[in-house]
Amino acid sequence: MQDLNRILRIKLLTMLQKINETARFLIEKYGNKAKIAIVLGSGLNDLCQDIEIKQAISYAGIPNFPLSTVVGHEGNLLFGKLNGVDIVVMQGRFHYYEGYDMKQITFPIRVLKAMGIETLILSNASGGVNPNFHIGDIMMITDHINLFPEHPLRGKNEDMLGDRFPDMSEAYSKILLQKAEQIAQKHAIPYQKGVYVGTQGPTFETPAEYKMFRILGGDCVGMSTVPEAIVAHHAKMNCIAFSIITDLGVEGMVEKVSHEEVLNAAIVAEPKLRLIVKELVKVI
Ligand code: HPA
Image (tube, rainbow, N blue to C red; front, side):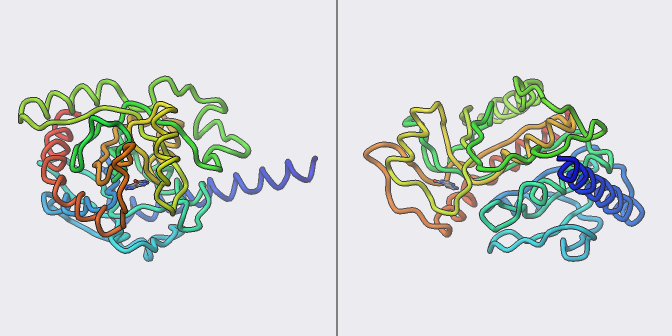
């Protein structure tokens, strides 16, 4: 037992050292003016077109960062301005199905926090299980159901990073959500709100699984976002997340789905989301 405690303590200290080392490296190189970070998910890369990119660094060049392995996930950290507001952008994220553990997946979020980021904007592509949803819909995530087989906060807790037993009654900021809704309404951009079910992938769901997720209370299902949102919330960052519905897992309508289709559907919907995010950073 003492041995286990020692090992867990060493693991935690190593993680803290790595977070600090990486944050220091990035701050020294790029500064720490930004208070907002954006994580770009599948097919949302075009959001970068609106960003005045000042500096870009490939994940491979950042000490302690894991490497991205999926086509369509570029793997760069961008520093720049969106609509005149300083931001940091994760162009590509890490997924559980790629083989990383939860600490690796959420490591960049810890680093962003250590760099002074206060607000995290997450985006992803997902399969809709709500029968009222359509392909190309934007869903603002109000809540999630965590079905990943590993928890990002498992292990010895470091009180400096967050609480041992974090409250999750508002993982996604209601104030940010309200602001995003106001922007969408102002521009007559239709949107949905709902619960994101986070699963490990890499398989898309069977018809029975889509049905189960709907029965469980989900509106859409995807393979990301939940670990990052949990860690952001643990770190007391404000978090908002957007999902683009790229396929439907609605009973009687489940069709074959491929990664290419997901990317294509996301690209079509993306300009609307882009506009919302662009205006949102201005009012945070
Ligand atoms: N299921 C899981 N993840 C996804 C889906 C889906 O249908 N679509 C896009 N990402």
